[in-house]
Length: 137
Image 1: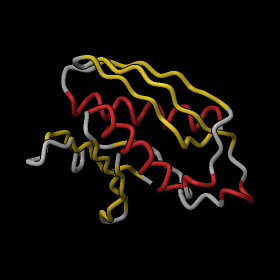
Image 2: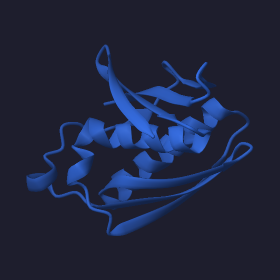
Image 3: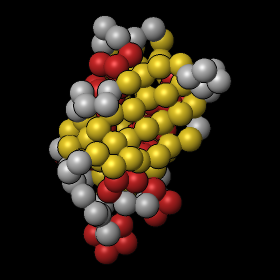
């Protein structure tokens, strides 16, 4: 699984690439953590279980990322590890993380939501999966 962020005007793009859609979705989630802090600084002592369904892959990615954003905002957590399962357009996942520690994590931004901008879930020519969108910061 590979992840990266990319610049997009005043916001930030997140991108995951993996052998499966599930790996690409997990990579996009890890890239989202990287917008806030270095994921290597985030422990994995607490879990969040997430389940969502959507009519297509792109909307499923938005629902997944926005569910994580909701968990981060309401539980004051950051996540560093993700186990994602996708069956058709139904996602079940576990995210592992820990409470935000401002001194240690030094959060660089607060993510408000995942957007339709640059939204794409597709199989690449090499067979890998891509999952990306822009998140509002």
